[in-house]
Length: 199
Image (cartoon, rainbow, N blue to C red; front, side, top):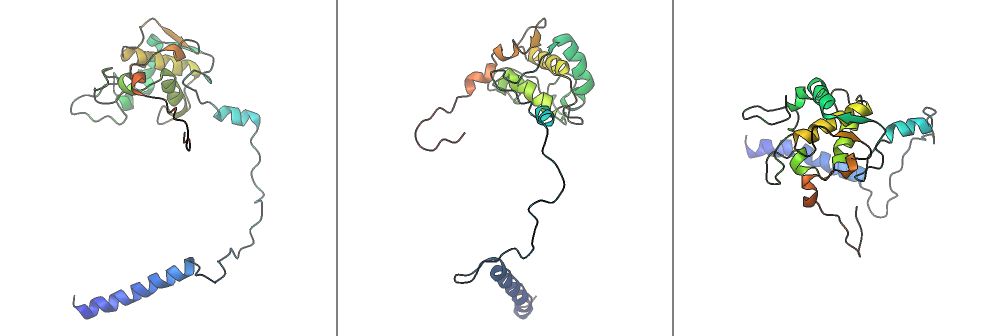
């Protein structure tokens, strides 16, 4: 392509870019562009959410256990539920196998901070976070479909598989927040004072 052809092709592009700039950026002294469409304040559909609808979505669980629902679960039931609802993405036993790429993350591993990959046992700081995340986002193909008892049971199974709790523990809202995760010591609270606080 010669210089003349390049110049001929470049000129329209430069003109287009210059016109776009002047169309969207008001210059000094000119009145800024305003919306010429007269939009209504309301569109006439929808309604305020009811308290019951808000409560159905307000299911977050804090590290201290606030927000945990009633219910309970054990390792034995959790292992069966894991096989039915979790293993397809996270593997039969939740571990990463050499040469096998799981659709979901590995969940079970060594509890040493230097271990790879990051799993519940070596990375998550709170056991309640596991419950909270699982209840809201799992299983991947049907999030929010697990009952509270099922979530407690799968949580118990995964904590046991990561050697954090014993096999005979029955998890509930009272004892789940008391579990000390191995990785908790790796996280620090942002307790800085003075200046702008961003949390």
